[in-house]
Image 1 (cartoon, rainbow, N blue to C red):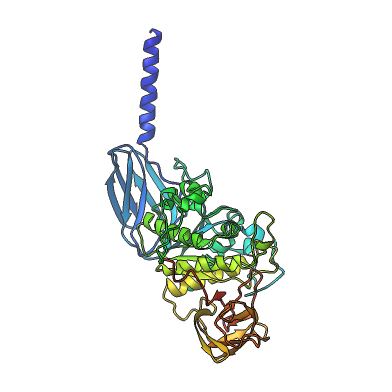
Image 2: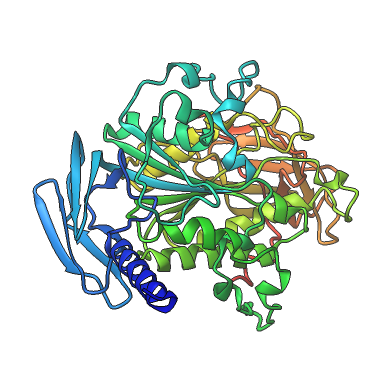
Length: 486
């Protein structure tokens, strides 16, 4: 046999091997053993196979069939299911058969953001001394034993589809070490409230700005304010646009979720962003909802913690830049099915960009979800929120929502971090007194008050709470962006 024939034969064998390899069903990494499927929704199962290959998926007494398209892509939707603690198998058949084991049905949430969301349980285990907002729970890293809470850690350079189906982990032992503290305690508290399996997906990268989490094309917009002014394209801020979306978020789509949690902003706050961040957060929320084909999916986020941003040597930052950033985060509440929690009280030192009370952050997010997603309207999920103000003689009467069972002072001392100004806009420290569900604010220096602010400083850790112990949300009555954002 001459060299040419040997070469052709070798090529034929290689093509046959390659064809058989591509003919096998391949699943995305998010589909695997031990996963939790979302209850009471159609559940998407998808993957790749040979073009026109017949695929069947069997789970929980139902079998669905489909045919891969010309590119080899396929997907099916399982009919909605009730929550189940019974571990069951999913059998996926084509030219090969894949059996995924120990699958539960319950509630599935995605948590994403930067280092404070990524903050792992191994770090939390070293933080057991100080207490704010709640008593620290037991050392779950060593004692957790609830196999009905499942976790999936979305790692960069890991999410490419492959023949391996390692899947999810129970939130116990070694797998819990690197998982998000916020994500875990959200799941733990939610489990106690709902008594159904909980699945948590963590996709977070330390130090990341918001831009890498958004598909590049979705930032090719020039937001138009209500006054007609058009902002520069959001993508002009760069920030490795789409980098983590492409590698960590897109591979999750369209895994069926109940909701999304977001804890990010520190990196953008260092850039003194305000209204531009509001539009970026809006773009992220709307684009992720579009990706999952669910315009109503809940999206809850954390108002970032007090920190000494003005101490930065890289750029001029004032003590008011952080409150302005909080304000820009809150503008996202104009979107339906969004919510936020304040954590101004969960900081021991404003020199610490990573305050350790992450279990309480997770708990507060679970309160938010319990109330707004699961209809437990008796659950108080927020501290006092500015509603309106009224000038009364030489004082300002401030009315709040989310007062819970009443307004209070955490330490029994007069309320702090209130300031007041006249028409000249010069703010001075003010006296603030609780009067029912309102606060009366005044200052001798201001006889004709015009506007009021609360917690308007990066160092502000006020004693103003509701009786459920949740902190009041910083605000300014002279917010210039509220009337311009759309």
